Image (cartoon, rainbow, N blue to C red):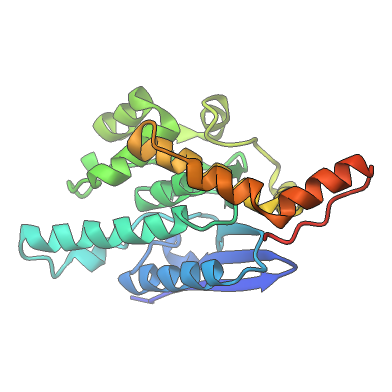
Length: 257
């Protein structure tokens, strides 16, 4: 079994994360999950990052976890430890302060769908497919936390379809239900991803960070307090710069502070 890699590159304020195991449709090994966690930590520690793009090498995004990793599972506790590991890694993706974009050009299945759902935005090509086929393949399950992520992104009825009938969602349905921003021709996907990353990078970073955190809290807790987020925005130098730039009829220069 080839271990694959999760490659990180940062340039011009944009972090690019590549799931790199194309011969296995980027099925994730445990080592790849560990590397993804490290990449998220590196991104979160780099104040220059204004946008993050996740994509898969070859034709797939991520085809879930490599099933051969389950060969040594002996008890239910092995499953609990595995699901906890996946939850922690997905949460690291979700908690990246900069906005995240998933570029999906093929299959995003099982854990791959969960990773795509953990990103803020998704742009896809016509060959994109989404699903959780475990009811007809391995017979395991998603954790409740990761199931909740799919319900939040797709709606309860569509999540039930995927989980109970093991149905997949095509590109057209992904756009129709709001999961993806749009379908882009394969030859245009790199340009569109760069364009979206540029827009995200040019917007006020603290405003984006606060919006992400507010939405995350709402999804997790219903109607939590957000006074700390309001203070962060209105007490920032970026807010003062934004007001000055607006009144002076010029473009603001954001610093993220």
